[in-house]
Length: 202
Ligand SMILES: [Zn+2]
Ligand SMILES: [Zn+2]
Image (cartoon, rainbow, N blue to C red):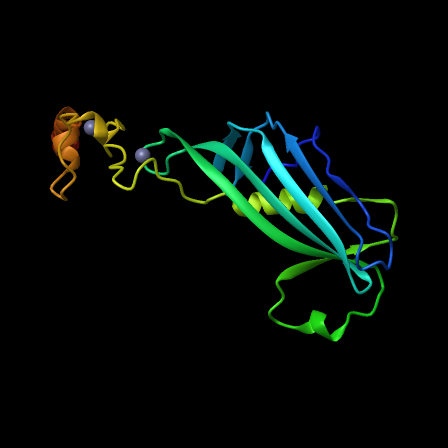
């Protein structure tokens, strides 16, 4: 995974402390020019990244919902043709003061949010790491240009969608000698020569 883009930072205003009716929302759009490499797949942004954040107090923790969306271009997993895909993902984070004893709810196995420790409450909270994490989770590990993509010829590497390439079909009958008949003969000739030499040497 590559690092998060340097030119985008995401800071939200922290609602009035202790006021459950106070909340804050923010929407950013950020053009990401760098490629992202995630799980061996290269992604390029064809649209700016949109991030929506909504923060409100939940007891003494700050609940922040993050939603990321954009369109990215990545090579098809079969034929490598650049393919546009829309991404959209949301996730809930719960920022909690460091060292605070976790409430019983936090021990629950079925948590729908992730806990993020903060050292102190300030007027603003940097949620960039969590935006980046939500973005990474929105990226697909496998992308197909179409469900019928036939991929590439195993012999010459040409896209099979372009029509027959003239290569022998890979139906299990392919032998090395069929591909490189000359090489096969040379090996045979060498073997004969070696045998001749050996006989002479005796
Ligand atoms: Zn494809
Ligand atoms: Zn071929």
